[in-house]
Length: 108
Length: 129
Image 1 (cartoon, one colour):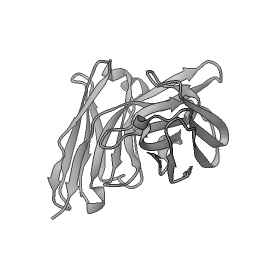
Image 2: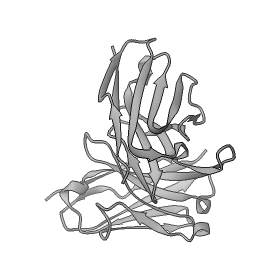
Image 3: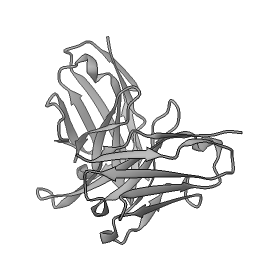
Image 4: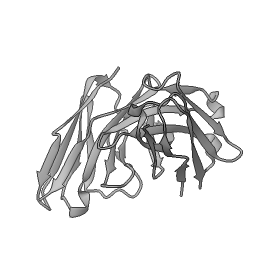
């Protein structure tokens, strides 16, 4: 079973700064099966990135995904106050979905 | 646009049963696999299981934590997915989300991309005496 480990657990940055969120897989995974979700407080998760680097419909180009093998990254280039959320990576494989434990993004 | 709405949550005693419904609109329900994902209070996301479309035999997969207790089904004529939960435990307390599974062929890699592109707002299930 693939385990996804996200880091850091919490990230506190100022508006306009760049956020880099990491997702590490316990073994090499296909990038087509890696996605990222944003969950704002009190809301359902929302798809941000799929196929490791493809932005979902309506997602601002401030959000980008990259990576391959065991290391994947979600980058938010210029933080805005509404980016406060928990971000989850997700992998699909062996007929099941696995989520990372999440990274909480705070805006100073 | 696709929309999903869960219903059926509530307070239930340990050992009892509950059935959740997910009503879909805005897309051809029968063409898509549907998943259930849950989130315990203050915790992360946990995939519960999914049901494939009839075009892919309608087969079902479950997480180990619920296998044998939970059953997923679908009614394509009414665009509804169900989650039947039996022998409920306190650790099943969570918000339950239904999601649409998107499986999209990537011509660049020759592989399929698989992700959860639409989520409902969730329904809270509390298992307590």
